Structure formats: C-alpha cells, structure tokens
Length: 255
Ligand SMILES: Nc1ncnc2c1ncn2[C@@H]1O[C@H](COP(=O)(O)OP(=O)(O)OP(=O)(O)O)[C@@H](O)[C@H]1O
Image 1 (tube, rainbow, N blue to C red):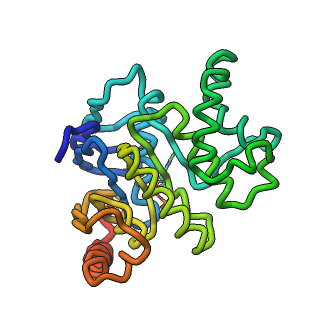
Image 2 (image 1 turned 45 degrees about the vertical axis):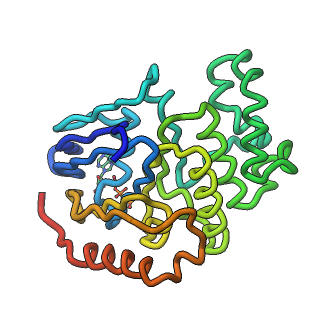
C-alpha cells in the first residue's frame, strides 16, 4: 500500500450502556486509495464516518491521521445520502456554503474554484438555478462539488447515491470514477450496493452485523479505467459473488 493517511487501530464505539455499534475495527487507508465499506443495516458504517469527523468520541482503540492539514474538517469533505442543500441558495451559493461560513473574502477567492467544480460536474447551465429546479441526481452533484470545494485530502461518502434511481446512480458512479481518476483523493465510500463497491474500489471492507467487525477485506484487482462494461466481466462477477458469500456467511453476534 502507498502511504497510510488514516489508521483505525482496534476501534470500538459503544452508544450508551447497551449498543456496541463497532468492535475491534482495524484498518489502514492508503493515500489516494478508494475504499468501500459494505455491511448490513445498523452494522456501524455511518458511525465510522462520525468517528472520523469527530462527531462522536471513540470508546476504545485509536484513530490516527497522517495527512498534513490544520484540522479534520480541512482534511475531509463529506457527502451525505441527502445533499442537504439550502433551498434559498442558488447552485453556486450552495457550493460556496463552506467558504461563506468562513468569511466574505474566502467566498470571493473560492468563487473560481466553485465554478470549475460546477463545470466538472456538468452543471454550468444551472449555476444560478435553485435546488427545486434540479433533479435528485443534479442535487447530489451539487453536494459533491461542495464537498470538493476546499480540495480535501479525504472524501467521506455515506451512501451518496442511495436515494437515486438506477440510471442516475450509474451515471453518477461513472462521474465519480472519472473525478477520482483525475484527483486520486482518498475516498471512504459507504454503500449497500456490492456492484457499486466493486466497480469503484481498490478494496472493499465487508462488515458483520452489529457489532460491526471486519469480516473480510477484498482487494479489487480490476484494471482501470473501469467502465460500466467492467460489470459484465467474469472477474467482476467473481468479486461480487465473493463479497456476497461473506455477507451471507456473517451472523449477528450479541454484544
Ligand atoms: N447517536 C446514537 N445513539 C444511540 N445509538 C446509535 C446512535 N447512532 C447510531 N446508533 C446505533 O448504532 C448502530 C450502528 O448505527 P449506524 O448508523 O452506524 O449503522 P449503519 O451501518 O450506518 O446503518 P445503515 O446501513 O442502516 O445506515 C445502530 O444499532 C444504531 O441504532
């Protein structure tokens, strides 16, 4: 693996007395690596992102960063399942929200970068549109542009395409692949879709039901650049079946 930017060492997270959400999660994430996390509902996937963002404290273990940045928020960009756009802001203003929160002058300096990202995500004609004038897929593109505004080293994505229809999802998956191949950011991507995980990732972390432990880490050695046609190759099918077998073989363990 290349340089590690983030390392979970035996991380556990308990909510209250009874809910052990994540247990003994041990993983290093390489610089520029695309890592997906798949697992049953409630196995602690979103919790892992909350721990990274510092929104929740760890119960056990440690989480270390090796990226040079003044803060976790400067180092990471976050994309949620719902893009959480401000309805009274245009596309440009929504992308610029992180700058506006800092200062007016920051907003002015970031305007060019925001327009560049809007163009990269195919939204130039909608720069001055409001969220209600956009499709779900376009709204999610705005969410991605906003997460990339400050050029974070690490992109955290929590089921970003989960609320989209199949065709829009495929299109956005391909766009994300193109963006990633260009920038090679470190991406931690949470999904329920095995094929999305295989198509995008260098490694897929498969988790057990709660308490979420690592059941397997599957390296995806498919050539890049990948396209939707990659899904039809026998190698792709083999990876997808292997992950499915691991998911089907994991049993719920009482905390
Ligand atoms: N703030 C909280 N307080 C108490 N329990 C919580 C809290 N957040 C999450 N949990 C519990 O921790 C467990 C893991 O939740 P988490 O949202 O991380 O799972 P997930 O794998 O992301 O689920 P899904 O795939 O359904 O989004 C669940 O049992 C959930 O009920």
